[in-house]
Image 1: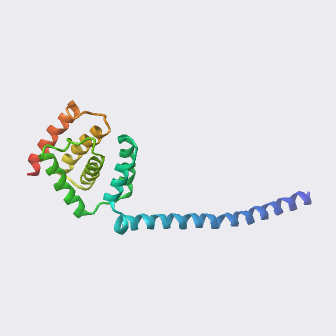
Image 2: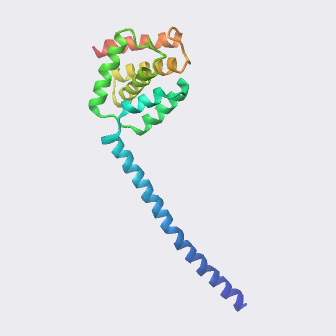
Image 3: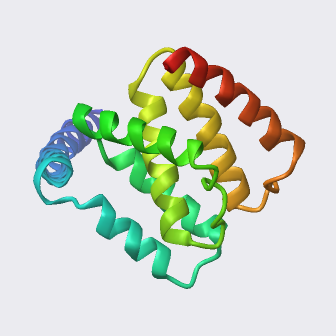
Length: 170
């Protein structure tokens, strides 16, 4: 009986010693996560150039849908500044008013850039400009991926809503 007791105590001590060895690995993981978050923060504020990233995505050999999904990943990693959102707001409104906003569906860089800009306007705004950006974004991403055509009912319906939002913006 004493042997079973000693074996149990010895096993517990061994397991405790093994548990201490795994603790530093968890700390290393936490350190790695902190380093990754720091790199992402640095990327957003100093090093990250979204125009260059969009150019890279646009020039690869992927399909439009795959390029869009690559852009979506980028959208989750980037944080637009207030001044960028204001600039993007003016741009998408002017682009829509020009009547050419869906004129170059096959121009990947233009479409991805406009999707990028409208995403941040919709995400970072309120009121009529947010509503406008939402419908603009819907039309851009669905026509770019080939889900809708520029003369589809969904696109026309969104354009009607965009026109209503423009009346409130002006």
